[in-house]
Length: 300
Image 1 (spheres, rainbow, N blue to C red):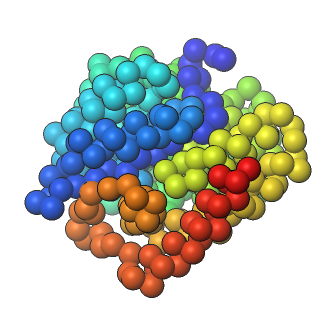
Image 2 (cartoon, rainbow, N blue to C red):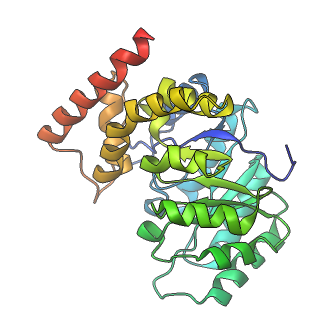
Image 3 (cartoon, one colour):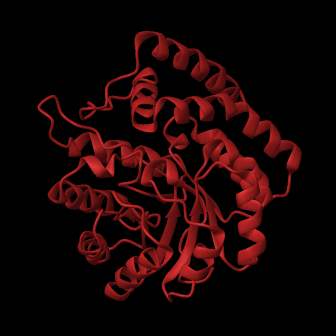
């Protein structure tokens, strides 16, 4: 594997749990990270959408980054989300992540004002100039408010240490177009859970997902089946978890993963307002989905 592409396979997103008095619950967080490492995840990605990055202070983000690197202890690579409204803010968090030992950083352009393609390029270029670790350019217009076109993403790859692209628009044609435009050598990652199978079929290097929190056997199994080119098994494993993938996206990853963990008997802390727990009806629905997902997975 190219040293500038340290991530492959299932890259798992932990939630950021909070205490009853609204502090980041680091002991619970460490336990949940350990659970993901133990599940066989190929990488850990703190401070993404699942980790409610925009809801944390700079100091809290530093603490989560340090806790992740300490808990993982080099067993798998760590991809730290460092996005911020300002370029200066991203540079600050990128430098901290690099110094803490992250194998790479992930940047989604976030903006109140719609940025031009040139502004986005300069944003990434300045961040890349401040660190030496590989950078994943993350396109998710639903959360960042900006949609980077395949042409812009290709342009970002001209920046030496921007070596990875994560696509989360949920458009399978976009993924196929990206692979065709970027070529086979570019590391491209799926960030849209319900499109995992299609993304792997399009040549995705990996899948960045919160799903291993709730169904690790199925997510790891899907990747292994793809690696073995066993399409029949890959389809079976994907559709076995498809309902769960749709649910966690529709209900919001932090809410759904917290509820799912607790249904599985794992303490997962509190949410930070304005996020609120799933309703009782939603929890019951998730419980039924997990029953359908878990029983075949353990039986197999």
